[in-house]
Image 1 (cartoon, rainbow, N blue to C red):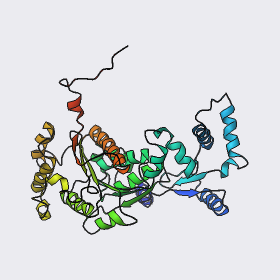
Image 2: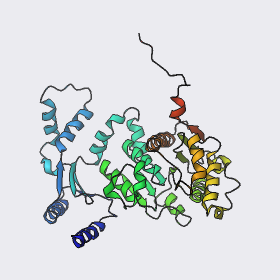
Image 3: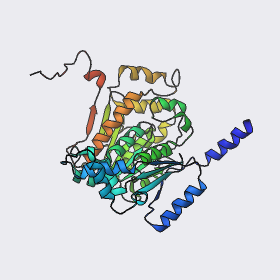
Image 4: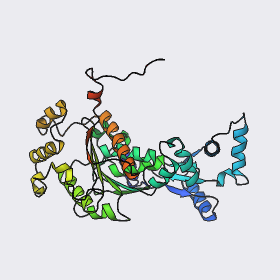
Length: 378
């Protein structure tokens, strides 16, 4: 049994770096042949075909003022298909890492339906503009929540993601994933999850993370990033990323999952702005100082300023003694991902979002010492 389990594990490991789905449009003869070949060689494939319900949603989205009598929406969906056989309508998407084959509307109609409930918090014109934007995310622990929220709102056309690390059991207190994915690259994990939400979004992973040798490529290859979200643990990379982003006038957003801290650096509007609000001026020139835990913690606390939560402040001296690293909570990470994604969208749309540092501290906002707002009953 042990040998059999080892052989199965080796066979499964071959698929570990797959993150791009495969698309088939059976209306094209070549794609139809490719799809038939896939079905022949993959007998255990799982097929999910809910196209007709998607077409019904599409018809409703295209006719929001229409009041449908029973059965009329079904007929309207059939009429929308016209003479095209349902099998060849839209696109079939194969996810090789899970063995699923899913029937979807093709890109334009898929996007129309999937973003329908964004309107008009995001207008159709704004949604089209966001689809042209390039966003980078460095660090995929906190960054995973940012990436998934950006994907949910379809805030980008291309997302570049960077993390050299793999998923560990201790990550599962804040990274939404599963135990069957332990040992997977974090970048693969995020790319797959986005592909399962929206296979038409472009995701470009950097499996080695970001460093001095590839930061220029990350920021500019294929077109300059419109915005960088920096969420890594490395103090040196935080500095390197900002120095290069500043040189290219790329704005930087960072969520720190303590007290809901959000940093915004508008290097696009303020090319002479000091990085990290000037909090690291004395250490920028000597990155070799970050080679030991004490120096890294000292630099991190300098970046954080004087407003750490009491529990975080008490935890910092314990790192390397009673703690392996600084603590993070799932609720803080998920909330921070939402906050960073919201700021990102507003910057990309040209809304009034200045540089600065803000705290969205629920512990403070919802404490007994704060005044709750209660709507008055009529």
